[in-house]
Length: 277
Image (tube, rainbow, N blue to C red):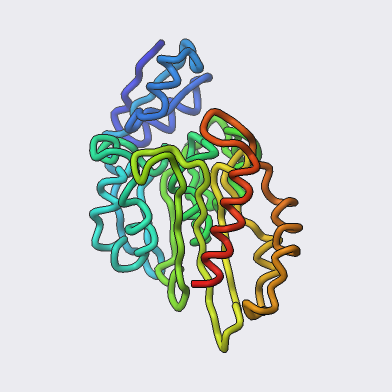
């Protein structure tokens, strides 16, 4: 294993442009476990948590920019987040232990690509984008388009996530919802997680955004369910149809934490709860 500490952001881009089998280390809450368990072997570890360009929370025009190495504690404590994106602030209150909140980073939670990642369903419901940069260019990618398979994403080997971008008005005039079902009320890996936003006018659901975690190989939006629900009153929604579309969009598995039938029914019940609120 080789450990590398870039002297600045430009040096980082040079390094990742020239080294294969590299892993970026910020908080280390995911990668350290994977190394210990032998999932990752003989890696080139590039430490990035000291690079100030990758951390912090700021307002820019109509957007909130969150640096990829910003810790969850800094996000939870941020006045900017609490004011403009309260769904993130409230949803992450029970994220991990205080120690992990201090070390775990938002970019790491995303890049690791775990199906159970806490923050991804929330960001999906908020239509978040990622700024992805390399030595020669930067591009923005909607989070909904970032994952292409289990722990696979659209980044090239010489790219990294630098910022998470959320519109300031992402929650404006929406009712919000987040529920994580685990073995305990907090400090638990999600068996099912769902985040949602809905806009209701004259009893009709004019817009709805639903995102789920722990139900597929990576967290995702439920676009078919959303399309069916939009424009209907609660009375007009046929839950047999909701089930039909949901079965096309989620593929829950059975594991040590839960069986697939339980996950599916919990997801249906949480959607029903959100619609009835």
